[in-house]
Image 1 (cartoon, rainbow, N blue to C red):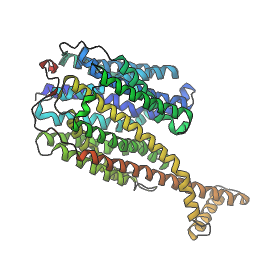
Image 2 (image 1 turned 45 degrees about the vertical axis):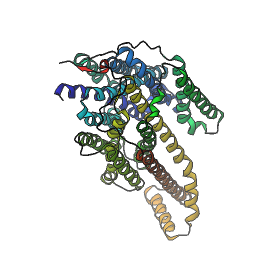
Image 3 (image 1 turned 180 degrees about the vertical axis):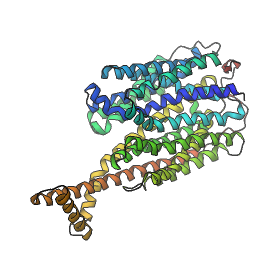
Image 4 (image 1 turned 90 degrees about the horizontal axis):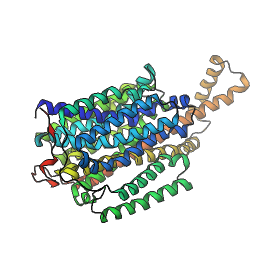
Length: 523
């Protein structure tokens, strides 16, 4: 493998890293948007939801568009759109403009990320596929993990709008150098019509599902709106499958699921993603809301497992290339270490220091770094042409859907179990217990001598402080419930992974295999 191929690979990963960074970096500036646009929380949430929906809807288009305009041009189109809309979002004068920009930003991500995986798999030689997938895993896992860190730093030291401006220069560089270094190759004879019916049905199904998952906890899972959205999603999904099976040129080639290695790896990816994104969502809340760490400190803590994920991804890819580690062994060992990591997260308490928290989170990052490059290589197998694009798009779509389900369930568990834990604690702890009496005495002393609280109010205020302590502990137990849920998702992901039979060391190509499907490096 020559140095130019490696440089191109790094450029592709840089572009993908930017787009996936935006899935979490914006979360940190939501309060600033509310102030700048004088908007309510439920309105500003659409800045995040719109990006997620647009990304999901545009991913399946990659199969058709990549054949129509070429793989490189599809990727550059996605990065160009993402970069341009990043600048627009940074300049947005109102919430409506921001949401519109985020929709088009999401479309850019939906085109770029699946095509990044496709290009990496194509341009790297057979004996370096593991390295290619390790590089992909860096963007896929490292990007979302670093979002809170970079977002917090930019917000504190510059301005909240820089979470968008930060994408502009790297985006321009990626587009410019890839245009120079990578030749665009189109498939000959690709005259298939775009599957409009399939696109509309899938778009409606994904949109209603993702809105329901995002709003279920705030609107109520039994509310008419959520029930209607879920029914619509299921009905349109069934209609989509029926349409695709009858169409000569389907938007999504469902024949992919005839391959056991793809089906089992897809199921494992969804379950693993549910647990992963549950932790992604909960850890910043635990650090900032429950423990009171600043955004910068929380970002520093989360940086270390994310950085370790990137390093381990590359090492895993190299070991796979050198035949020192099999794909199936990497997948299973990655899941087992991930399970151990999420189990350790349930041991996070209310007094741990930064160093101890970081140490507990490291196995979680290691598990991701081993799992992702191996699973990506298994799912892509020896696909070529449109089948390769379809596999890549579906992998990323399943990652997004699985993550949305995991985040929604994590939020539901956190909010629904808190009251029950609070009641259990108050029932089990007697007001006459020595520990409670001692705590009340110290609280009263603090209020009287430090806060100068009048004597008639001491009892009531001390009880209020004790109640807040119970409430904080109830939240802590609810966080442990969520981390247990993430552990269960990891355990469940082992079941389909056991049945995966990777196509290691096989030379036959699956799907389109014409020479025109290859990508050429200038030089």
